[in-house]
Length: 425
Ligand SMILES: Cc1cc2nc3c(=O)[nH]c(=O)nc-3n(C[C@H](O)[C@H](O)[C@H](O)COP(=O)(O)OP(=O)(O)OC[C@H]3O[C@@H](n4cnc5c(N)ncnc54)[C@H](O)[C@@H]3O)c2cc1C
Image (cartoon, rainbow, N blue to C red; front, top):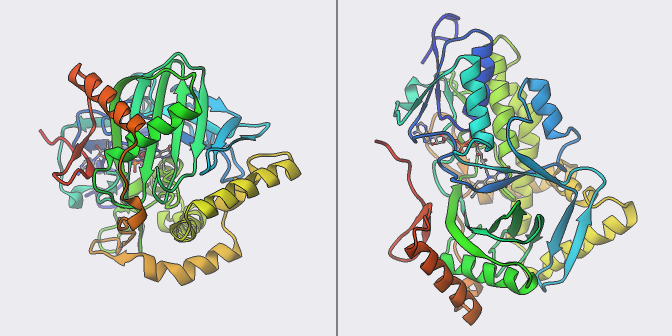
């Protein structure tokens, strides 16, 4: 680890994901010698072609304007903006949330040139940072710890497919198909993704994906699906006691710092932002710890409160949420107002956070004294047999898999899906 008082020493970043590369770019641009180590073979390898959404409702500033203001080129990766999103209620009613501006931007994660990961990698290299892939270092050696999730609080499983269906986004609240969370459909330029998120730990977890795909096929009968691969990953939800470790001065950024949305897992914006804040402190700017507490922590705490509320609800409450969202849209003319309010800090959410967080979060060992959201247990209603349609989806995928379709997660003997651990050699 570099001595913070020694301005000439090289800076070591552990993790070449969005948060680590954002920090590395700004530090290298300022003339620092920066080394970024990642255990995987490339940036974005963790995600392998997954579509992810940059939501644009939780803050007043547009994220792309923020990126430009920090000096990142928001045109250096492919993004597709949507102003209309299908909202699928638990009883399959479909409403449309609409806005005049941008509701979502979809980006691709992975190792292809047009992904956001590769764009951040290019910016870091152009700035002069040295990237070391397949390189394992001790956490103690890092000035910035940016290695994403450690443990599992939730998982997401998806199928990527070829389709001739037009560009489209749908977001579904359905506690059977996505226990405690949501599922979604994204189609961009002939490639589709149907993904379900499990905020309760499940046996035979791929049945949730099969059933979700069968549901979308029923709701969008004109959509053809030719599976390419299955992707998935874990989310780790922690609330840190410190963002800069008091003993070592190391900055914990992105998901390593618990800077993540506990409710629905929108973590990319906080990852980049926290990388920027860490670099700014190392370049003589304001304290990282203070800036995280000022700009990001209120959102993280709100999301903890939202997660606690979500853990209490089932489909009946999801239906009421969908109706409230649509009623608000009819009244205000903007489909983002209701959802924006849900994500923003408020007195009520602060109160819920204060009351609920001691019951929800468990203290862990570590330099940042994190409190962790454990992966919740399944409920009795999560035990069900797959429908005939879901079994057909499964059979179609198995055929594609035999033809070379890759999977980026493994299954335990109990059939519980887990993210493939990082490749170390
Ligand atoms: C399936 C899935 C879907 C998601 N969808 C969305 C979405 O739609 N919108 C959104 O905003 N967010 C989404 N997220 C969350 C988002 O991906 C993360 O919050 C974000 O990538 C965190 O950035 P990061 O820099 O902290 O970590 P990452 O981008 O994951 O980067 C961490 C890097 O560290 C490396 N690494 C790991 N361990 C070590 C080690 N020991 N040493 C060195 N390097 C290491 C990894 O290989 C990786 O390259 C999703 C997450 C998953 C899993």
